[in-house]
Image (tube, rainbow, N blue to C red; front, side):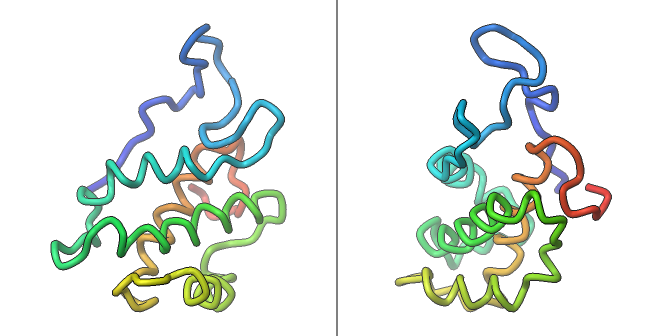
Length: 129
């Protein structure tokens, strides 16, 4: 299932201005994880890797790992696959009570990474997405 960005021009919801700041960032450019958490809480069960064996609470640490890393590395031209070892380590540190192993969580983390990438200007990891 391919997902599309419902606001590809990053229009400001109040003014309609094109090119407003990317979703998940504050006016000062600070990264806002709660925006991403809200999105994934609503969208997770529609993702191709989703399994009814798991709840949002199982997937949440994987999403967090992906969107926080994308926010952290967006200006360094780093790819998800290049950072997988580090992402796995970070996931293991934050997974808490999640029942997902990294192998089960990886695609959720990747989806969160790519969503941030699509919302930022340019192709920050040069992977053509």
